[in-house]
Image (cartoon, rainbow, N blue to C red; front, side, top):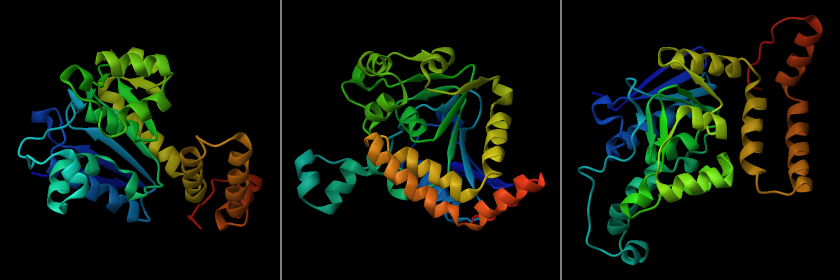
Length: 268
């Protein structure tokens, strides 16, 4: 049975973490499958938006499942400076969980159903949009078991919500419910559990109907300007605006607006 279900329709790829019996916890094999499916969607020109969700209603992803993962007695320093084999054993999970190197410029929506804990929240924080069921719950419990969120969880949470909320979650390890998550801005909206995937798909279809190059430019700007001054951010914005100005989709968008019809974007 596949750890990640994959289907595409009308420009939207839906990836479902398919380990409901383990609350969709991410094993090494499941992470490899997830990365492979994300890369497949990235390289498919027909796919414009991705939706990630979990099988069942109990969990989006309850975090890491490291059963059967390789172990080693080597120190962390040995892993950094010694053999590739040791380094692989020590850091394989973290490296697989960090999706940045996949260079995915298409938008990703997390449809969060149920538990979103530890590595599950770190996965959701790497998505561009997050919506949740009213039964969802969120947390970074690592400090309570003597560790820290290992995939930039604190960093990404600090960017997603006000610092006071982020620090309270990370330092206490306590869970918050869906209403609290929406109130602090961790998720943009809540849905009844039975309506969650349909709502995520509707949002994805709306995005997929927009000009693909413009959508990807928005995501790139959002990711690359957060740390810049206003002046530097404006310079990069003007570069992207100028690049898009002469695109076929920009001309099509203007013509469709003038003719009061739906634009036909081709991603060029």
